[in-house]
Image (cartoon, rainbow, N blue to C red; front, side, top):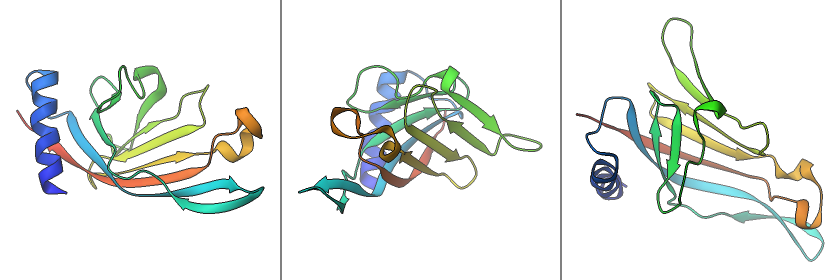
Length: 137
């Protein structure tokens, strides 16, 4: 895990320019969900190891190896009483949501695809959890 975060940190610093205290590199450690197999819902492991770059200043989440933003500023809000404790991203037009705990350095991504229908309209529901490391300047 630490080697992967270190490699991602180097890549993120190279791609994003000078890193700031508002940037975090995050990696999925566990992921599970459900899919339909022969007409029945079955629990299945999902892909582990996905990596994300979270910027709490610009409110952008990017996924390594994917073009564009996973979430952009309009999808995310900072929550907390006196200072931001969480960044929560939940786009209006998607069934995926992400919450990042700034002090705990943990995140969760969920898909609520079960409620969207069947066939091509269905998105398999899943939950992914992981940890983050701060990119310092």
